[in-house]
Amino acid sequence: MTGASEGGLRARAEQRLEILARQLERVGLADLQVVTNHNEPGRDAIRRRATEAAVETGDLGDLLADARNRFWDWVQSAYNRLRSDPYWAQVGGPAQGPVDDRISVFWAVDDAVLATVTYELISEEDRETLLEPYARMMAFGS
Image (cartoon, rainbow, N blue to C red; front, side, top):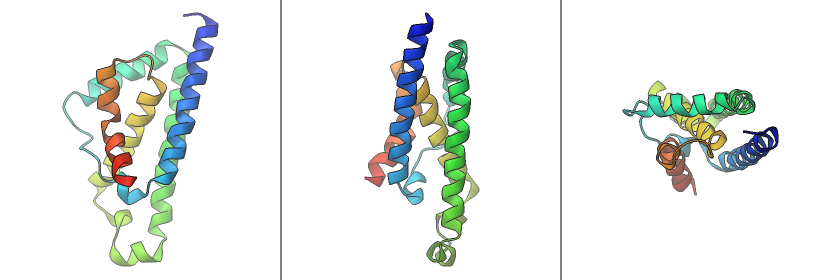
């Protein structure tokens, strides 16, 4: 892959990440918990293939690491904001939900980030598998 095409690949991945960030800002945290189990069979192999594809391009490996940190921080901040909301604190809402629900949210967002960065590098089937929980939460939240 040439430097110019790698640069274009990174620029397109960055554009997709910005779209993802804007979409997530519009979805409530309760909506994010409507996701599938993060331990579905085969998901780890897909995550590994996609991560390896990003790392092999060089530039996208760094972008993926940075994006994962940014989006994980976003999820953690969303939970922290929700925890301090008097309504949710009283009713024991999403911030007080089971740990498995919170882990599923983190993994759904992480899978969406991974698919977004490696969109042009992984198979359509792998991309759809990674984006499935995210697509469900976007449909639920809209």
